[in-house]
Amino acid sequence: MSKRRGESGQIALPLGEAPHPSSAAAQATMAFLLRLRERGIGSVSVLRALETVPRELFAPFRFGDLAWRDIALPIACGQIMPEPMFVARVMEALAVEPHHRVLEIGAGSGYTTAILARLASDVVSIEYFEALAIESARRLAHLGIANAAVHHGEGLSMAGDFGLFDRIVVHALVEGLPATLAGALAEGGVIVFGRAAAAGDHLAAITDIAGQGLVETALGPCRLGALIPSRD
Image 1 (cartoon, helix red, strand yellow):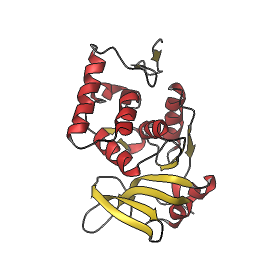
Image 2 (cartoon, one colour; image 1 turned 90 degrees about the horizontal axis):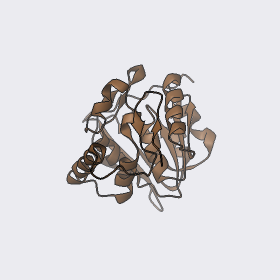
Image 3 (tube, one colour; image 1 turned 30 degrees about the vertical axis):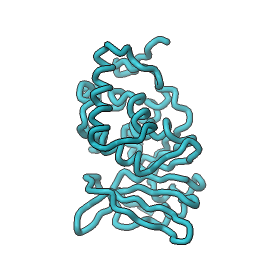
Image 4 (cartoon, one colour; image 1 turned 45 degrees about the vertical axis):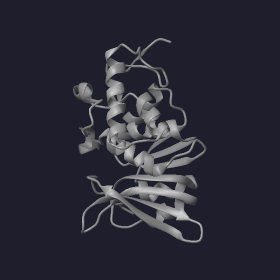
């Protein structure tokens, strides 16, 4: 299978195709995955998704050589692409299964959207900034990802427009669980988001447990930005 070249001039292997084991790309990927395993990421499906989604295609061209390092990278509109370790933590917390529908608030560069598409059957992503929504959708199309769609708009006001979801992820800090997200969660579902708290911002998961309702678990500190409030 031939390689495909993006508009940025960078080259990426099609999803699922592994580089030659002796190549620099393969060695960088192996080192990248080893670092994630050493830091506690054990989900085979998450590691595989991170391996097969070319992060360099979602990073600004000038940062392409940093794509496989575990650092956050700046993108357009004053936003960031989170470090891969944080993305892996979020994916493990979501525990996405192949039959799940996933709602993502904040597509950003589209990197986590592509990873979610490797794990779930259907991904709906809502991005506040139109420029980011257009670019992330273009990148997904370039990689042949057909089970994820990026919509431009305000995530909280649009969350109820697409039915129920098994998993919801919010790439931002909120002080409490918005009613629109709780209403979009299917029975037994999970929401992962940044919890803004006086004691310290942290990543949190809310799980719909039969007989108990929505149960929240703190997952550790995070450095997400505040969610842009709806104008409604």
